[in-house]
Image (cartoon, rainbow, N blue to C red; front, side):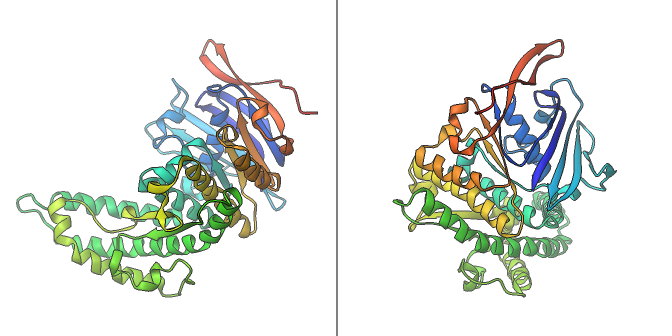
Amino acid sequence: MFVRALSLRDFRSWDTFSHDLEPGRTVFLGANGNGKTNLLEALGYLSTLSSHRVSTEAPLLRIGSSKAQIGAAVVNSGRELTVDIELNQGVANRARINRSPARRPREILGILRTVLFAPEDLALVRGDPSERRRFLDELLTARLPRMAAVRSDYERVLRQRSALLKTANRARADLSTLDVWDGHLAAHGSVLLAERFKLVNDLLPHVAQSYRSIAPESRPAGVRYKSSLGDSLPPEFLDVTRAPALDDQEVLEAVFLQELSNVRQKEIDRGVCLVGPHRDDLELILGTEPAKSFASHGESWSFALSLRLGSFELLRSDGTDPVLLLDDVFAELDRRRRTALASVAAGAEQVLITAAVAEDVPPELEARRIGIEMVDTEQGRISRVVPVAQPE
């Protein structure tokens, strides 16, 4: 898979960008703050419908603009599809596939698969569980685009059930529909849980191998899904090496409903939903200890890189190379980690890299260069493509 062309309008610092791209390795070269990361962010948004830098879409619109556009031509196994999305302030976003309107933006998911590694990824190891849940769900949706609808349905039910719980302590609050919402939450949540368990099972060997290649002197790395269902889960679900069973979803739904019943009074007292995928975590293990508490700075970087490289290898094992996006990360890595990342990048179908100076990119990658700088215009400071010397 590769992106043949990328176009932007009023996205971040770009009033307009239109450039043909090629398979292989391309580096966007320019000083920090000139807008090169915005290009990778745009591709990441087309792939996941979210930004790796911000949680809301408002910062993605260029200052003074009411909408932004991202478009790409994506080639997969010789077939080209065009996909674009319009981000609107105050109204619903709109997407198109081959110029035909999509009913919902999420219908474009799966057309472009990317794996993005950025300095912010250190939060996967040291940050809150929400960072790791997002990592899991974006990877899950990349493999199974239909899971975007499952996630949306679960989040909708969660919001409505949570709103009901918040009224629970008010006089004459009507909780008669709580059982109905329990059923909906368990039905959607069990699908998401079953697929997350399977994903972690599939991801584990790739993360472990990636970590061994990056930090062979360190303790072995592992990942484990930590569910808020806790001890209510059958013991086999706690074995990350188990093969998924056909009835996993049914088992999880029954356990989910039982646990909701067990904690109902606590939920009413606190006014929040205490059980479900929104409360879960991906445990990162070094040796026998949690990486968040016991990993050194270097080990944390190695683990973050291993999660991304493991994701890349997992998606590749499904039959198609994702586009590898490397956002100014070589400057953050020591020689060994640079070499490990460059080794994977050298074999990928397409790698798009940002760097402040050309020397940050390992010479073995032999990347084409596209210069980026910020210029002053009547519209304010905007990003532009500029000529740059190519490697000999």
